[in-house]
Length: 382
Image 1: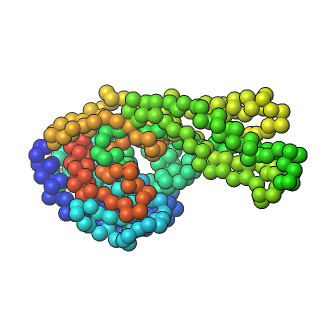
Image 2: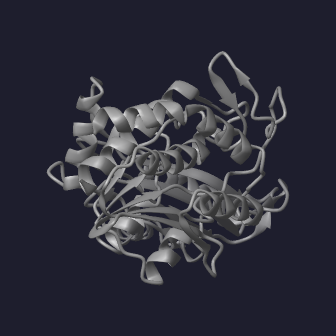
């Protein structure tokens, strides 16, 4: 049965590469995924899958076995970041050169979409008699920093359920058990304006912010054995109107990537403790902090069925199967924390190329991902 399935995947490789090229040629920057969703929906219907576009713009296609059983979901987002500058070729060209397919979204994460669709098709083509169903969920707005817009969360809130899931982010085909969470805090310092010729008559809000910056450097981020260390990054700062005036206000946005066990509430408390410490040292110091974005890390147990199934699929193809984590935040957060669906993060491509000019994916990795996806379905649904 395994050999028959792998032969089916092999026979579908050409179709998969063409599908990936077609996906890359359709621009789908966050908020503009409609055309891509329509294409995938019709493509899945043409394959005989039950497919629909929901009220949020997400695609959900179901491939059902002949008997009741478990549901395995594949989750990969439709949207991409904007093109940006620095490209040496058309970002929607889908050109193939030296075994690489180029284009915005190729690695993040349209390669996983193509691989999961063709893996499901290969199950059918191979005549595999399976129980349960394969759910292909392709949400909108994963790339946006606004949880209220996240397509995956909306699908879950509308009642989507599954027994397990593979989130197809670009992981270099490593089995990631953890994704980090992402937080953002906006800190505002308040000073007293004065003429730049007599700065001693005012209180410099930028100077106050520099003190906070120095204290933030003393916070030690958490560590996870899969994902490694979290991080803290003061990324945006603005204050003052002109150099001849003592600034009376300054704002700084600080991101923090968290490992399991860390929360936004904890980080906000740490920042507020810094503010209180500085107030105690200087009666002119004034500042406030606000948690403006709060997402969580995800984690799945090594003993979870989906983890064992992916590992077994790797062993069946004679490949190593390192277990790791990813420092990036992705929709595994909502799948595990909101709906308690055990979720592995696994897909072709590398996060080092995501969001970069001249983004590409190795076609050999897309082929391998399709094999692993198909064998995982076979293991879970047999």
